[in-house]
Length: 402
Image (cartoon, rainbow, N blue to C red; front, side):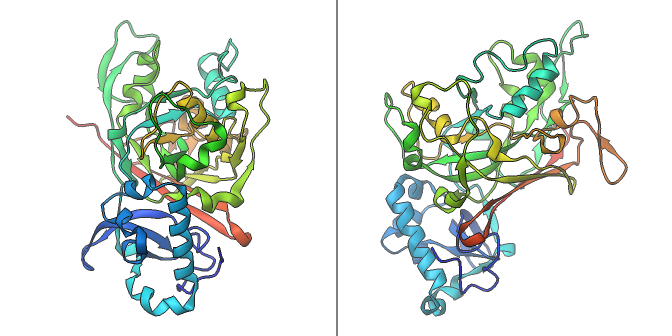
């Protein structure tokens, strides 16, 4: 696909022609009800009017019908949009349909069928192990043999910009005689990358690691908000539950995997060698994340260093015969690198509250306070030396109810 577009401001933009991420947008003044759009520069283009024979995939208020259409359809529509937005002969017809990006309302881009979150950063897992098991091996015996994950709540996945109400629940510190109930005292973030499933599978079948691109349509940014005090009391023996299920935020733009081909890199070496069903297609993505707390950059996690890859995650997710549904979302787990400024969670950045984070206004943080705003952004290398944007996922903390 050409990197050059006739759309004003598109060339050199993070939402340039090599990107073309999909979302759902509305514009009251223009009479645009929520519907599929693509971002191009500082504009959005409603897809329904230009999709041709595939217009039926874009009739609803979610991307799910298009996701279900499969990879040949994804590639065909992308190629058609690329032609329309690069060929000057199309300008007269298409340009009047463009809407300013800063005037539209962005909605949840797809209906989430299931949500699974993994734990795939070697650096993050080691940090958490050292915090909670300082006298033991930081990694559990199974960690390097399989992608560990938990099944989350699809109904509490929300679009970027949705406020986060501080959850309440049971907590019990090691020194407490009994558990207590109240607002979460260690509210945290997890900077992650999510993968959006398009093509479904039947129950009893599995997806080989080499077939991930036949099923995964694209990528979103994820903030898996975490209630650490609630989680610490509940997670033995079955793992995360209420400490995770209250809310997960995703970016409003789904960047197609086809756009991210220039960002595909060899994943880190794995030792021991994984079992055969996990040994194929060990590619990662060179994604640069940035975490801002109240506008200040506090971390720059590198997704390219993740130990377990999206192909391995999907293969493991389905190896027992679990089916995929259109709109399934599986996330990477916290993205962290080897240095302190690459840690993708506050529990790591503050070392569980023992090393406060200094902010520019003179205040410090160990965990989130009411009124704090967290924004995660991401970029990737694109075709012809361009840079692609993944958009942003943001949320502001509001006090607990009641």
